[in-house]
Length: 81
Ligand code: HEM
Picture 1 (spheres, helix red, strand yellow):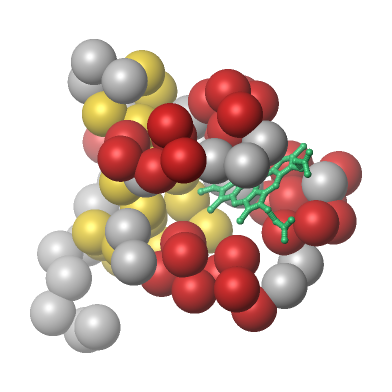
Picture 2 (picture 1 turned 90 degrees about the horizontal axis):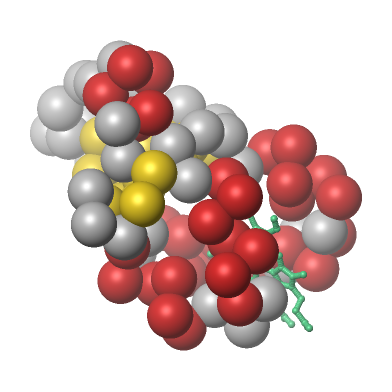
């Protein structure tokens, strides 16, 4: 929603571990996916995207090009970039 705070790429890069939280970006949104890491069907590979953009990884793993994947992601939105 438009009520989410605006944050910078620097803030996102500080969140790249389970200890500091795992944040990723996708199309102008910031997502705190810390709680989802353990539920990810693709396992710990998800941590490769921690602190940065999902797009390059999802371009490689086309399994994510499905509405149900975007619905999962949308639950974790915390910021706009
Ligand atoms: C599979 C979600 C990030 C690698 C999946 C599936 C979901 C999902 C729901 C199952 C899709 C299906 O079978 O219908 C997510 C979400 C992500 C994320 C919400 C980010 C927030 C990543 C990243 C990578 C990755 C960054 C790789 C670097 C994979 C792989 C599979 C998979 C390899 C296939 C697992 C298998 O079927 O054996 N992901 N994913 N994912 N994901 Fe992700």
